Structure formats: C-alpha cells, structure tokens
Amino acid sequence: MARPVATADTPVALGRGGGASADAPEPARRVRFGGRARDRPPGEPRRVAYLYLIPAALIFGTFTLAPLVHSVWLSLFQWDGITAGKWVGLHNYADVLSDPVQREAFGHALVLLIFYAVIPLLIGLLIAGLVARSHIRGFAFFRVVLFLPQVIALVVVAVMWRMIYDPNDGPINETLRSIGLGGLAKSWLGDFDVALPAVGLIGTWVMYGLAMVLLTAGVQKIPRSLYDAARVDGAGPVREFFAVTLPALRGEIAVALTLSTIAALRNFDLVYITTKGGPGTSTSVPAYQVYERAFLTGKVGSASAMGLMLAALIFVLSAIINRVAERGQAR
Image 1 (cartoon, helix red, strand yellow):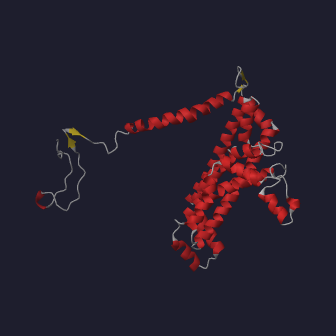
Image 2 (tube, helix red, strand yellow):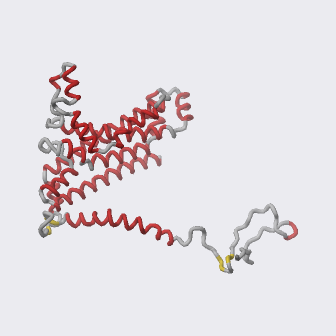
Image 3 (cartoon, one colour):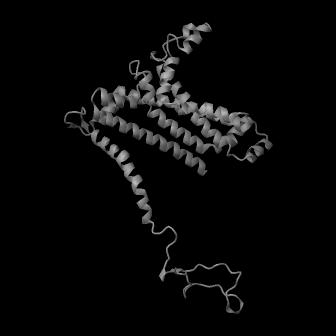
C-alpha cells in the first residue's frame, strides 16, 4: 500500500534549531498517493454528482415536464380527443378569458382561497398564540385529533359532509329545527347563495389542522427569553403576539399559505362529489371545468388551455407569497 509522503514544495513550520516545532499547526500538504499528486478537494470531480441526478431527472422529465409540454401543444388545437385536431393557435386561451363561465370559475377559486387559506391560517394563529402564552395539558393529543382531517381521503370527507348538509335529515338542519330555528334550514349544497360557502367550509375543516400543526411547531422554536423580555417591558397578550409570535412565525405562515393556496386552486374532489359544480355553475371551479371540458364536452384543447392558466395562477400566487415572506425575513 502506498504511503503518503511530503513533497519538497510543501511549506513546513520550523522550530528552534531548524527542526519542526511540535506545537506548530499541521500545515497544508500536497499528498502523493502512489506517486500521483492529488490536488482536488474532497468530492471532486463534481461531474460525478450529475450521474446521481440522472434517475430523478428522467422521472421528473417523463412524468412532469413531458405532460406539461404536451398540454401546451394540445392547447393550440381544437380537438375532441378522437378525430384529427385543428390548429387554432391562441384561440383557446382567448376563449377562456372571454367566456363568462370560465371567468366565473376562477372567481369562485379566489373566493375559496378565503375558506381554504385565510380562515385556517387565522385559526392556526389563534391556537399558536394560546400555546405561546400558556402550557396546555394534553395538547399533543388534541393536535393529533385536530390534524385528522388532513389524513382522511377527500372522497370520504366529501361524502361525510354531503350527509351533514343533507336537507332532510342532516345534523345541521335537524339541530336548527330542534332549537326552533327551522326557518333557517335549507338545502345547503343546492342553494345558489350558500352552496359555494358551504363547499368552502369543508375546505376550512380540512386545512385548519395543517396550519395549526405548522404554526404551533414554529411557536415551540421561539426562545422563551423573547417572551420574558416582552413581559418585562409590560407587553400584554395582544402586543406580545404581534411583537414576538407573529414575526417569528413568518416562515411557517408562508408554508401554510402556499400549501393551502395550492389546495384551494386545484380543488376538484370536493366539488365533484358534493355539487358537481352546481346548482347551475355556482360552485364550478377551474379544475372542475378542465374535467368537464376534456371528458364531457370533448374540448381537449380548451381544457388544456384552462389547466395551463390555472397552473400559471398557482405558480404566480405561490411566488408572491414566498417573495413577501423572504423580504420580511431579510429585514
């Protein structure tokens, strides 16, 4: 086995009498292995690292990039999915922007953002503020229970809430009748005025557990000395929340808003099972319109255009949320 030896050009620290000092730090040495100089730092050559990325790149390209590029190609055609397509250029995009039903679907998606993202975030911040202020016994158990909606399949959630909203014997209407408020009982998913908020409340029930877990975990990382300093300065619960808790949770808030915003905009399962976009088009959302156009009306090109515009909207909103969060952290 070849032994490493110091070369003549290696700087050597000399002690008294010309010998090497025992206390001197170990100098950097050019090391020879088997007579060949090895000047590269550990990990070189870096080109080897790209070999490890090839499998992931192939999977990403096959299942993500290729379908995306194919969707862009389909969006430029008027095609029913069976016969030969007709080149229409950007007409499908213009059709999505000019069609009031399509614009209404995007408006519904933005309304659902309030129920999927804003309300769950406020609930999570409220619980995080309580956790930061005082120790809650058994909170770990309650956190698991409150997180359960996140692990239940949305199909099951939709079926369960359809039973809850049942106009005849659903628990909500039964409760209203039992307390003398039967006049408020209605077909929650069949009423033009309340169907969309009713679907949104299901989203709130699903998403608030995620926001709560992220924010309470973030609170536990905040140094207690910050709260002690705030209390010494006479800060009350509200001022303590806005001065300590809220700024420290900026990263967790960005993650919660990003995930809930994506969930709101790509919402399909709940709408399909509970209302199928109805009554009329009062609960129709872009993801449901993509399904309806592609598989029910044979407008594959238009569906591709709408799907791409929905993906662009999700990308833009996610980028804005993360950009704002990064600027806040940089201050």
